[in-house]
Structure formats: C-alpha cells, structure tokens
Image (cartoon, rainbow, N blue to C red; front, side, top):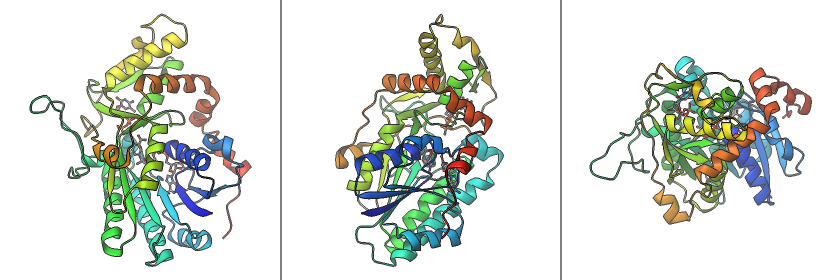
Length: 358
Ligand code: NAD
Ligand code: TYD
C-alpha cells in the first residue's frame, strides 16, 4: 500500500482527484490534507468519506512544524498538491493569503518531502498542480490563420497576484528538481468547470444568479476568452501524468475549447431556460456589463500536444455535454449551493471529524 497525500482535496478539483484516485487505485491510501477555507467543503466527498483507504486531515500547508510532523508520521510516498487560494478577484482585494498558501505553503510541503526522503527518491513523486494563468495573456488575433497558444516553453508572465503566486510556487518546485534532485512534475491547466465549484467563479456564479433572478455580471465587454476543460477530464489527466509522466517535466492540460465569456453566459442562459421550461431569452435579460477586472487577461489557450503525443491523453467530454451536466448538477443540488453561500457547510466538519493528534 502506498501513502498518497492529496492537498486541497475538499476543494473543487481536489474532490474529483480524490474520488478518481480512490476509485481507480486500490493499492493507495489517500490522505486528504485541507485547511477547509471558505472553498473547502467536505460535502464534496460525502460519498467516499467512510472508504477504508481514505483519511481526512485538517491542517494548513503553510504550518511548517505540523507539516513536517505529518510527513514523519505517514511517510507519504507521493504528494499531489492542489491546495491553493484560487480566485483572481480575491487576490486583487486581499493578496496576503495567496502569498502564504500558494508560495510559502508549497515551499513547506516541498521541503518536508525532501527532508523525509533525503535523497532516496526511488518510487517517490511530488506532483504540483498549477494553472495556465502563469503564462500571462494571449492576443485575440495572430499572424495568419493560427492563433498563438501556451506551450510548455512559453515564458512565464503572470499578471495577477493569484497567477504571480502560482508562478512563484512552480519555480520553487522546479528549483527542488534541479538543486536537490527531488522528483517533481508540474502540470498547468486551463479553466475547469463542473460540479463542486464554488459559486464565485464565472460558470457556477451565472447558474446560481439565474436561479435567483439576479444580474449576471460580465466584466468589460465579455470579449475575454478562456479554454474550458470539464473537471473530471482534468482529474483523468492528473492520473495519467502522475503514473506516466517524467520527473522534471511540465505538462500543459487543456480543453481544446476556447470561448468568449459573453458566449458562455448566453449559452448557459439558454440551457437553464430550456431545463426550467421557460421561454428562451428570459435569462439573457439578466446579463449586465460591469466594470472590468483590473489587469484582466484577454485570452488563455493551451497547446497540449506534448501530453497527447507523449502520454496519450485527450479530453473526453465535449463542452456541450459538460456544460449541460454542470447546469443540471447545480439545478439539482440547491442544498449544496445554499449551504456554501450561507457558510453552513463549514459546520459539517466539526460534526464529522476531529483534528488528528500527532
Ligand atoms: P478551490 O479554491 O476550489 O479549492 C482549494 C482547496 O484548497 C480548498 O479545499 C481549500 O480549503 C484548500 N486550501 C486553501 N488554503 C489551504 C491551506 N493553506 N492549507 C490547506 N488547504 C488549503 O480550488 P480549485 O479550483 O479546485 O483549484 C485547485 C488547484 O488547481 C489550485 O492549485 C489551482 O491553482 C489549480 N487550478 C485550478 C483551475 C480552475 O479552473 N479552477 C485551473 C487550473 C489549475
Ligand atoms: P473566473 O471564473 O474568475 O476564472 P479566471 O479569472 O481564473 O479565468 O473568470 C472566468 C472569466 O469570466 C474571466 O475572464 C473573468 C470573467 N468573469 C466575469 O465576466 N464576471 C464574473 O462575475 C466573474 C467571476 C468572472
């Protein structure tokens, strides 16, 4: 049995990664380490919380002493590191937690992993989950037909405190490979969507606001483009890279589905209207153009040729299928939405778990 530490497993992507690994790999014990910030919700994992190969640990990745004791106690063979502060708008308003968790927290984990194995890295791996936002912003037009995309060799050019903090963590991870030979892998993924995403991010926010007949805020003119990937496909890519990837390498993960924000929002409006048996066009009336986000990146697009050609991965879910499933999930999980918006879900932990005493 291998001990695998997944950080941030109570969050959006982490919860899907925990489930994917528990379901597919019977010889792993999965430890989910999560601070349970506003974004961490154990209800995301209610279906697997009693699985014999699963342990939840509440803790802060930036707490050096606690993390080193935890690594000594459980001797994690591998780390899949997702814990982070993730919302760009929050990073503009309150950047401090982004620096603490994304930079300091990543450093603490890396160092604990290095101290634990101390040069004996056979069969060990530190897998760092990152974002395409570290590469900066792409133009909407290229030279000729082909629009530029981010590849693994695109120079880093982060433009928000969130992406700058993620870039810092990526560099630290790579530095441990070159300096200390710690086996690390970094993957940089495009925007995810799907069940369990906190309704501050565009897609769940729009679905929830339509439900509540509230305005749908679109920053600027809604011309910004993101490359969307269904969250279960991201979990599948992480599984593939974790098992087949080469230490020291970076892999880009993308959805091959670029869309302007305004087109996504319009599409969601029409899907919700149809699912609720209303006249199509009803929800679109809620669209409201608001002041643009400062430093708003214009376009993200991922070239995942390396991942496809070397490890055989490609996204399986079409955007039409994924967005329909996502809308359906939010419409049918009113209690989840109401709980996360009211903060009621944070009490769930207190009832279910106790801090593991080391
Ligand atoms: P999320 O905000 O939904 O979840 C983050 C999780 O980390 C939460 O459960 C939170 O409680 C936990 N956490 C935060 N600070 C912590 C700390 N100090 N110690 C321990 N746990 C802590 O995030 P997400 O959208 O699921 O993103 C997960 C990872 O994937 C992040 O590293 C993010 O940068 C990366 N990523 C996200 C996207 C996306 O579209 N959401 C795309 C590419 C990469
Ligand atoms: P978001 O979900 O915050 O992800 P990210 O900024 O990490 O890409 O935003 C996706 C896009 O939607 C981004 O271009 C900002 C835009 N947006 C809005 O127009 N209105 C909103 O209320 C939000 C949250 C985002």
